[in-house]
Length: 266
Image 1 (cartoon, rainbow, N blue to C red):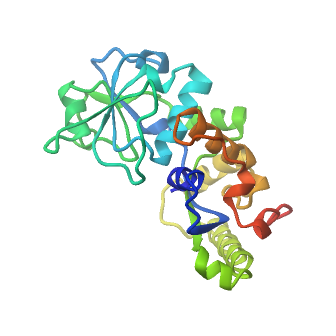
Image 2: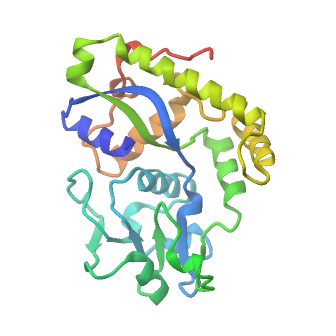
Image 3: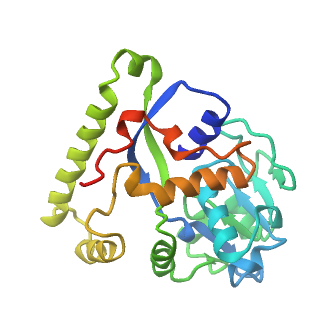
């Protein structure tokens, strides 16, 4: 998890060395769900509302909160947060933030459908959506267009997960960082060949791929630090703004030094 790594590193945890390979990245506008009776029609309507979350420190929420603040003027302290599980990395609740833990026999999905929560921000759709409930809908009705426009404005393509090497192994084999990163880059290039040959059994895949390239460019999942600087700078900024780190880390602190210039001309 990018967020949990940033939090841990800011506290001096140096057990891991990171290479600039990002195997999981997703825009998260589509992961905001609201109860249709809660009176939430636009992001500003979230102010003062009860919002369920799996946990506060997760990377998806880091980017959602940053997007709400910088694009819509909705601050984390404007929302009442209801947390379902314990944090993967222990955190102190930031000043001004209201976080309540829901009961162990409750779920944020269930509370949303009952109207005891006004919205949910999670990495999976509420179970009631799958059952066809008319009560639950996305905040952004056209999420793909909204997410594409967000990228055009900010150049932020949220990174969820990263690849780490245990520092003890890296210290004994410092060549491993570049070698491993190059292997992942080669694997990605081979995956792109399969994309071009339409070898994935998904209807309209070629149309989705065309749309992604129009927005993101031919390299729709770029690796490397320089190629992803707006996203990485946003992550360190959001973590500090949201009280998850006492200082804002520099992006170069996150990665093995010899990998900082990789793939700059790929």
